[in-house]
Length: 389
Image 1 (cartoon, rainbow, N blue to C red):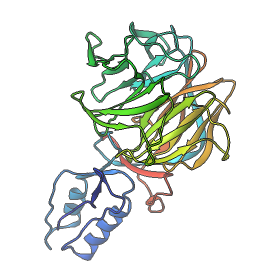
Image 2 (image 1 turned 120 degrees about the vertical axis):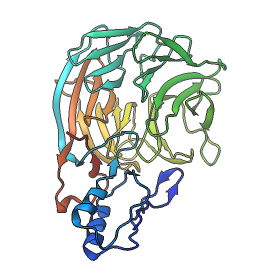
Image 3 (image 1 turned 180 degrees about the horizontal axis):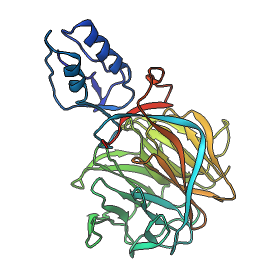
């Protein structure tokens, strides 16, 4: 018997993945088919490329072989037993912290489950923990737009901080925070980098930039050597996709998601991995004005965006359909500004126009899914692996 995954499309697993059974007893075939039904829009890693099975194998042999198959989130390297992620009926407040040495929270990058980088509009970039105490300060962060804010920093898979420096070079701070190096040097002064995002799935760095004359924006993809591998700027009619890309992230299917805003209105602009324009979300209901700020995606492929017009966090599905107002302006939170989704704890960090950060939980993690929970309902359920205890 051999186990195989479906064909790849654009470097990602296609939705129509199958497990092929060349020779198996009926019991074993039913077990494997039931397991295959539980696979949703996630990456599958086979630690053995071929498994052979004969009539002499028993149930224990098969189940041991199945344990080699892991279902993981993109870029979230996990090993261990299976667990289930489900969308909760509403977001639950988990905790809040007041960040010292910043006057607002324009952008958040999670370093660990209890340490985050927070920046404001006054060139402050602070590493803090859940008590709000400053643990480290970056001294050369570039200026952020006081009105829109910018996603000026990100954390890579090696826990290094990537940020846009005062001279608009893109710098890298080592994990031990002892060495700062220039990762990308600015060579064209007509383009100004506004936001960065490190892709955990590809190891690429996505950089959103804009040019004043004529006003336009673009997204540039760099590999780990700092070489340009892609530029996204126009749609299929050669019209510009962006005005000013202020925040940028990536979805599980490889889509590049940009919070684009200029002169009072904007859009969430989404392109596929190859650069083709998929959609632009301009608010709910249709015809509304959207003032997008911080943006992120989650393990269920939802797109979350802070809207400065309605003072809400809006949740979209991966195809741009409005699902709900996940969060609204509240006494505990105030006006919503920035977002970061922690892929390890599945908690949402939300920054405000003050120096307050709140943490919410809106995705529930469960062990040992039941038979009724083996199918995904448009992003509401997802099987992943969990670390072995």
